[in-house]
Length: 392
Image 1 (tube, rainbow, N blue to C red):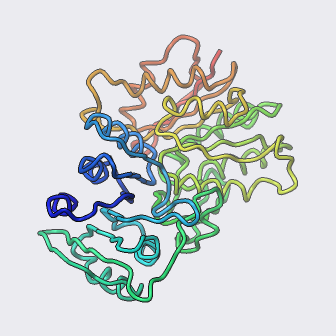
Image 2 (tube, one colour; image 1 turned 60 degrees about the vertical axis):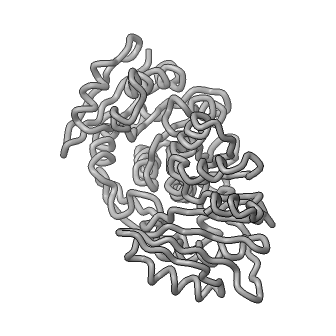
């Protein structure tokens, strides 16, 4: 489309948003048309942001990439072109908002071009009409449809999504529902969000990690003092919420600060919301609280995680790593060795590391244990294995 505009001598868009960019293919193609086009890629996945920047550099184009919700931006920000391969599983309420909001974020003459699965074509046609937008064109493929639309008349203005902490509370359309589970005898309640995994129940990885944590006891997981705890890839909050309740049931008088990290910013926001509900409102911010840090993995996010802990190291790190297929990584990449390397910098002396992985990955991880770490125990259940270590 942009190539056709350039060939016909029509003005090219000055500002382009690739919403839900994945690894950046669409945004990179837009940036390659003309170096004068300012492209922003956005995705809820921090790893997608990293890959988008990496792929842009490989293709020698310049763009901006952010890990943030769809259509996030600064107040008053407008676009000449919004491109999206819309995620079909984002949730109906989120998709409805996308159509309405995107039409209101365009400059005069601006367009939205959406690629959607064919089964949702009728839904999006209806939403475009309800938004008062004009359907400019439609093309169908074997499994997808491409819809282009623009603001109708009179033009409706809108605001970008405010992605600062607390955005789930500001935008009720993200609310998915409430889920309960009982983990090691402790009831846990979470409020879940669309676009993030881990809604119905805690899952086997959390169950086996909690069983091992309960065996270790509160004094090992949160020793006296106020050193922070870190939970990496917390889903929507089942494990960190269980952990806080477990510490409270274990007569831990003071809840230590909690840092959450992971790839999916929607899951992180949901986990942060759920954990914050369990922290006393009158707790002094410097003594107790919760923070979320987008991190593709513990190694890439190491510096940001140390800053979130105020420059100190963590008394306990619990992780549910999302390992990538080795075939998708550069030759020689060792994800498990990188995880051990990150732990040597993140854990305080005497600190405890708890990890839950698929059984075969856990066995490989355990074999790579470097010097300075002592194994505290392990449990295997339902295809997952939890392991615990202490740093000397």
